[in-house]
Image (cartoon, rainbow, N blue to C red; front, side, top):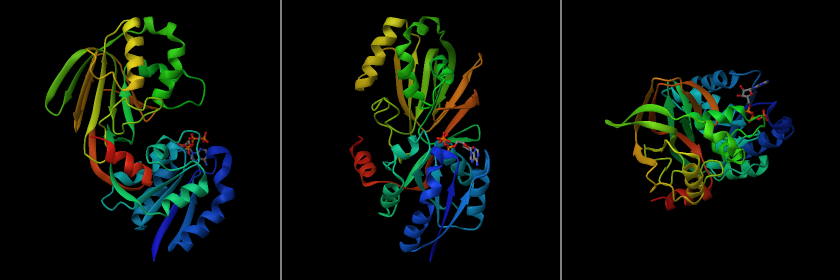
Length: 304
Ligand SMILES: Nc1ncnc2c1ncn2[C@@H]1O[C@H](COP(=O)(O)OP(=O)(O)OP(=O)(O)O)[C@@H](O)[C@H]1O
């Protein structure tokens, strides 16, 4: 019999998961999994819980929480040689990972999708011993996002939000960077760089159109120094996916990317503060077996 370990954050998403837990356990048992659950107790606990599940050779880890919980679970398993399969039940405020995999937000619907058993080996990103699944980035533009007081944590979602307060943009200074990607160099002043594992991020569905999650490559999108008018024009092109041809955009695909700057530059990982640059981004090819939806599989197949 296969063994599944649910790692859930009881405080996530207005404590919604606890009520549903008996039914979730029942459904996994019915589907042939011997299932147990661990409620996380504090920040970092999901990392330990995932490590323990790895040591105990569980077949499947089910992470129930928001992106923070899933990121911790990935952290706990990514460095291990044996890695259980991973399923996500979105419960938190931000559920970008689940959205990327096409997992519905309603708990029992998510379980139904998981029990369809569509499993895909997907890439994840690593930078300076931290992991990300969707997107990493840096530059003055992304740093604005930390000032957003609301729970709108998605990096690009927040950028869109900030575009409303566009008067802040003229005060933004570009940063001089040197970026080494698969042995080649980019050296220029930039407003922002993005290292993307998925093609659909936040409100921008086409920001990195060729980013497939199982090809071992990131899409690297860099916005060079711009003035306000140029920025507004490029942002509007980006909503249509027509930004890559613009002179201010540098776009390539790469497996390894090193970013150096003289100035202090913050790193954003999946919408959260991820320490300071420099950083070396590494694409871990098909590193984790994720439970995904049919919808996800169809969408991936359409990417060129
Ligand atoms: N028992 C706990 N009490 C407090 N914090 C916890 C607990 N368990 C986990 N955490 C921390 O809470 C953080 C955020 O949780 P999570 O990502 O699941 O939810 P979220 O998307 O932020 O949404 P929410 O606002 O609903 O919590 C996690 O990164 C984790 O470190």
